[in-house]
Length: 154
Image (cartoon, rainbow, N blue to C red):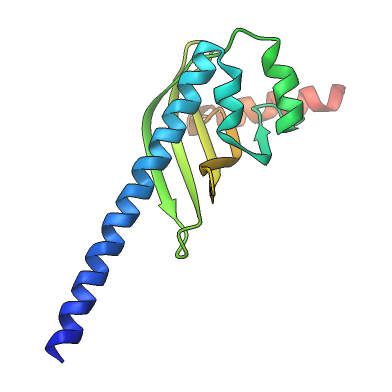
């Protein structure tokens, strides 16, 4: 019985270390993603996405496959989003993770990024990234009214 208890403790400790390593690797991928975007380093940026990756932009019409987003991004000099806070969660099998982060944008101020990463043979890759503008509750009615009016004109 004592051996099983010790084995369980060792197993749990090893699992906690592995999870911490995965989270550190995921944070490094996300930080590299933002750094590459800021530098217009599109090779690095898109190498961090899975082949079937999707980028969801702030406009409701912006759902880009990796190839579509590459065409858009390569025509730009890049963009700067600086992470302020980030939360990362792993699935129980450890093969995928989801995150949310608050970012500071030079252009837009406070933004939020959320997404999913998958474990591949090449390391962690972004499978989905979603950029949003968090709207303060006190402004929500005004902003959503403007959005509805805009959509009614389209």
